[in-house]
Image (cartoon, rainbow, N blue to C red; front, side):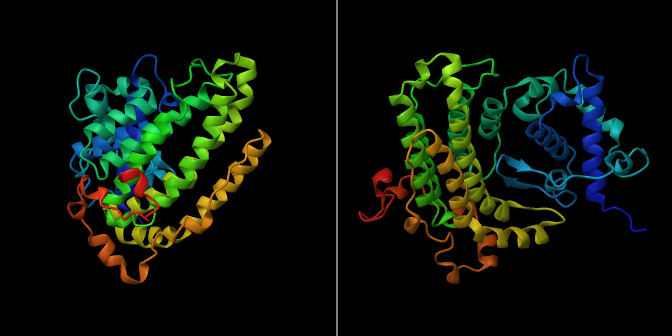
Length: 349
């Protein structure tokens, strides 16, 4: 029987160590740990143990840095986990003690918080602080994303009859308009995102139409029961953003940033997936269009303005793309030099 790869055993060990630590903290259980928090807690421990270079595959994707091995699901993680103290790698118990020690203080866990402080934190706000403190790629792009995602999430949550918080943001449209403009500026700075700016424009037009209509109908002033009728609309708008736009952008990030033992194969797979960008965006829009129609709101996108992401792909080889470094990006000042007839001129002039 073939032995499991060391990477699977390592990730299983850190996962089991975190699970054990959580179970030993009074008042906490594994159900308190969401998938994003789990990824970030495991990553910080793996890096703190010096295992991220060759032993473990790491890439940046929709919610920042992640472990693809964990995301794909590890079967029999309890069996795979390392428990023998004689080997070169830490054991489940040692990892558990690492997280338990972080209850007193931690400079290495995300945002220098204790294990339980990370678990208790509101996910979006905590993730924004995490991006601010991490020296990761495309930092300002991720910060623009979290603000857009959070704004739409707050609008939907304000209509959720099951939610404990029911306050709308002070302004429905302006925060989204500003941060989608910031996102386009960031995309313009980096060669690997060529062609994505019109997708942001089309999404922003749809989102502004919907939020303008909600403001016109004075949804924020409605009673809780009446307002709850708009929960589906705003939740689906957030889904359109996250699945239709943001995930397509981060497919390119995932290809470029992946490192570790499975890097070559993961890159090859992701490289094929980036070709689906236009189809995925249009597909998720059409699903949202059906929802908007239920509320008497007409939305549309101009598909003729959506280029293939690699519109000049014949001149861009995979190796060239993978060799691209962030130091080759344009400065923020440079993105203001856009021709008058460019579709994104209005947001960078």
